[in-house]
Image (cartoon, rainbow, N blue to C red; front, side, top):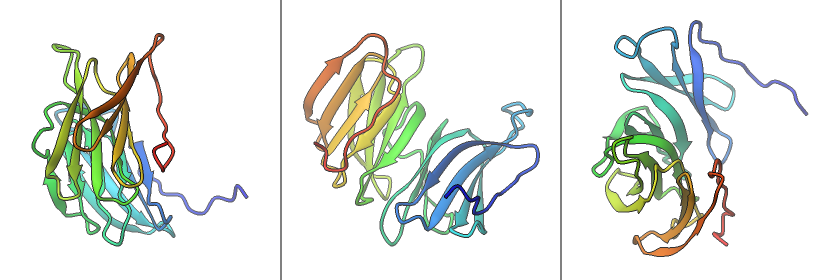
Amino acid sequence: SGKVLWTFTAPKTSVYAVAISGNGGHVTASFSDPAKTSDENEWQVRFFDRAGNLLWTYSNRSAVFTLAITAGNSPIIAAGGSSLILLDLNGRPVSSQPPGVHGAVREVTSSGDGEYIAAAVDLGWRTRRGEIVVSDRNGSPVVNFPTTYQASAVRSDRNGEIFTAVDDYRLYSFYHNGTAAWNFSSSPPFRSLAMTPDGN
């Protein structure tokens, strides 16, 4: 209907990412003060219930530009930016910079069942390459899938069987065991990605 349900304001900060749980019961957002230098800045992941009540705040020294909330009774909040951080429902770290993540996280997502978390990782300007890092909900690595250029987006089907990803000029589809299904090249570059929940 367009009615505003609630508003949260944090003075002198900007909101960089928002994620909503699949059942609509929780919202998470990342905040930071854009006027501060990276050395003195603090990033905060804040977690709200459906009514807009702030449940907890997690402070982090490195940037948080993307967020995702997994499905299930015990959701995991995945925060990506300068590193990949996994938090439980109470804001406690499950895993910080899981093994296999060695670059800037451009996007995080989870499978529909909440069992897998995938991160699109930019390995930096020196290599101009990227990778998709898939881990389980405890942060243990499942597969690292390389991309030709810097990875920017990733999606999963509901069961975590098929993943799709894009770098600047290529769209990839691969299975959770790391086997490539197909890829598609394009120019001009890819800027966004979506996939149906059934993976078709």
